[in-house]
Structures are given as C-alpha cells and as structure tokens.
Image 1 (tube, rainbow, N blue to C red):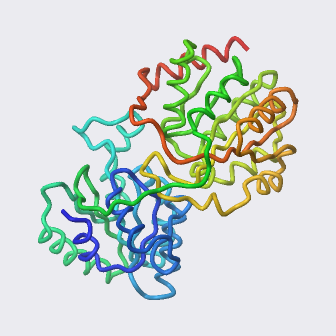
Image 2 (cartoon, rainbow, N blue to C red):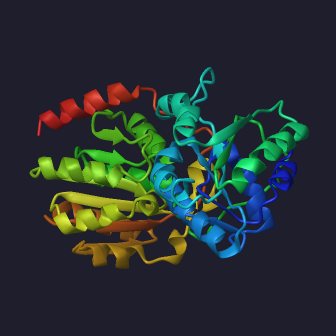
Image 3 (cartoon, helix red, strand yellow):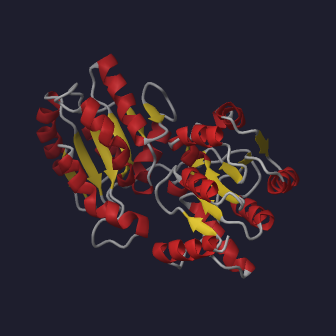
Length: 373
C-alpha cells in the first residue's frame, strides 16, 4: 500500500525511530515531509531511546507517538516497554512500526534469521498486540486494525504494525549526501594496509562487507577479521574484550557513526580501561547508510572531544588520505589507546557483495588465528 495512506491512517504527528531498509518508504516519506524536526520527526540513537522519547512526547501532549525500527531493535525496547510504557506502570500508549527482517520463509542474512523467527513472539511476550502488513494489505485492512487498536491505545496499551518486505510503496525519492570526499571502501583499504596481520573487528553493515571484499581483492585470508554482521553498536566492546585478553597483540576496531551513537557508553568503558593495544577507528559519514542513508546526529557532535572526555589518551579527526595514513601509522606504532575519526562520504559500489563464509566459519577461523598470538 502507499506509504502516505499508511501514515494518514495512523493519524500521528510525531515519529521517532532508527532507520531500516524494510521501512525505507516510510523513512523517505518522513524525511521528505518533515526532515529532522523536533516537533514531528527525530532519528534517535537507539530504539530504547526512541521509546523514552515517545514517552516524553506523550507526557507533554497527551497524544500517541509512533516509534519505527527494524525488528533487531526489539531487544533495545524491552526494558522501557516493560518498566515504563506498560499499563502496569505508567500506561503510555505507543504505536510501533517494525520492519520484519528474516521473516520465516524469506531468504535473509544470518543475523536476521533468528530475530525474524522471534519477532512476533517478542511482541506477544511484551503484551503488544500487532498486525502484519504485507504487499497484499489494503487500506481497509489498516483502517480496521487501527479501529481495533484505538481501544487498546485508550487503555494505555502499546500496539505494533509489523511490516513485511515490499509492503509500503510510492515513497518520494530523497537524496542523501554530505560534503566529505573520502570513500569508505578506500578508507578500509588503508586501514588494512597499516594493520598488517593484526586482528580487526568490524561493525555491522557495509563496512564489514567492504572489509571482506578488500581481503578478496588483496588475496588475503579472512582469518584476520571478525565481521560483526549484527548486534549494531557492540563492535567496540567485542574489540575491547579481545584486547584485554590478548594484551600483547594490537587489535583494531572499524566502527561507524551510527553504531557508536547506538551504544555510546562503550566508549566510556574503553576509555576507563585504556587498553594500550586497541585502535578504535570510527568512519563517520553522518548517515545510516546501510539501511538507506538517513542521517545520524554524528555530523553535529564532537566525537574526538567525547573520546578524550571518556579517557582516550589519543583522539584525532581526519578528512584526507594523507592525514589518515599519518594517524594510522602513529596508532600502529604507539603502545597506547588510539581513536581516529575519519570523515567519509555517503555511497558504496552498486555491486558490493556480501561475505561468502558463514558466521560460524568466520568465528572459528578468527578464534583459531587468535590462538596463535
């Protein structure tokens, strides 16, 4: 169904969420109509953040907000749904719009398979009534669901629309870009050059896909890399866990701005522990590019200042390859925690592939390599 019809039937005037490729039509519609507008549309750091923001909106206005997200974000909303929104606590009504990645019977990437299996089960466990929206769903179907949901929302209960692939259509075209010139895939090639045979932990999305293809292009083994294909925002914590237990080996983390924002407390833990063998590289394009290019707030904040405040002894930002190479060389030579923000353009190759090894194979090969250190 047309995304504008879907939005009209929901009847809300405030949306907050974390972008999802399954919800690209909705995300583009909101960006086209509202952009980033604190009164109508906010892209938040993580889905729990969205739920709390929605609660504040409801407290201030008495109206019903909409929270949109990929189903992977259900884990982040469990606590605020159970201990804040729930009708046994504050009874705050929210409409959730959830992209159903990994829907059973629909081929998807490994990180989405189990999440797809438990998507509706988690909603049931949280006491959230839901309606599945597919390509065949009509406007009358959505209207009937909203009529049923209104009674629940009036009681302070939460409801959800679970969006199948291709369900929302006719989105406006929105171009996402920035003024940076460095390509992420080329940035990753430079990181691989300076990291040598050091282990790399890479974040979810296109960064891991580009790292995988860089190894292929170089004729190198994939054993050096742990590709965090899911679990957005946790790559730096994985890298920290490895660095603390392999103190004689330098560990590199290739992170993204959206991932850093999602679980920013990880930087405080890293800075407090100060592992001398960890290099934390954040490729910042100010966008959730892997799921469509919608903006993050990372272009408006000082990541270097934050890293320093968290205790990183070395923190810099670069926007040229000459400066990048200089900082990568310094990080590789020093025995001290390093943070490098790399300002990056938005965009990737149209023919960018996906890892051809399984997640289990990746883990086993990486662990075997770590044993040699």
